[in-house]
Length: 252
Image 1 (tube, one colour):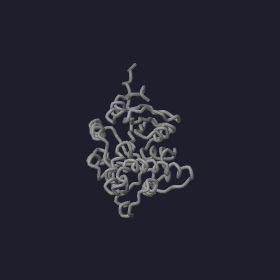
Image 2 (image 1 turned 30 degrees about the vertical axis):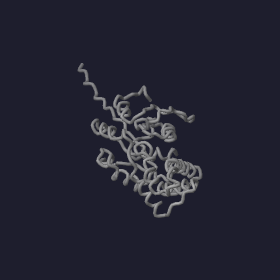
Image 3 (image 1 turned 90 degrees about the horizontal axis):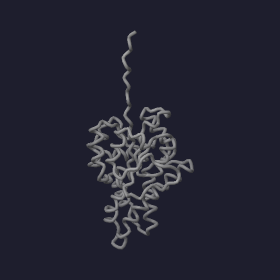
């Protein structure tokens, strides 16, 4: 009796979904531009205004989700800037608002991003940006960022996936289902996709629908969200590739 040859086992590579704002791009990097446009008696408030801008931006998305309404992320970014300036008592002309919003589409990348992108390309690990940003915002970020524009992501057939077509923001489950759909992954195979994010709400939302997750804790403060836990925690993005490339099931 002839023994049949062993069947070849094909191992599918995990798919990385990289959050953009706060994970690849530093939302606080706009504070220098903001400070340069504030009057001298308000310049010391630039960092706080920038922090509040980001806080209101996220709060607006969550409130819109809760109300069953949708304004695109560009509009949310504009409204939250106005809110942050108002609360600080800082009033800027509409032309400066437009300049700041334009600058938001070309935020600086974190220092650990170049090495991550280089290693992803070297190891041929597929990755895509997955973000609340509108397609226009994401296209601008990818094409204007010195770090992103020449990366493997920028050259990919699908460099980014926006929640805009869903009409909801993260962490609504529909956004992660849409991500799976665009990646051609069945919901039953959701764990093939690994979400990498510095935002706890994003991590918890992705995990709730079955994605594997890696939380980027650059400040080293540790996890505090009581609604869920990340599959793995890293301090810098370089660690992400080691976890994914090793298989690392015990890490998830």
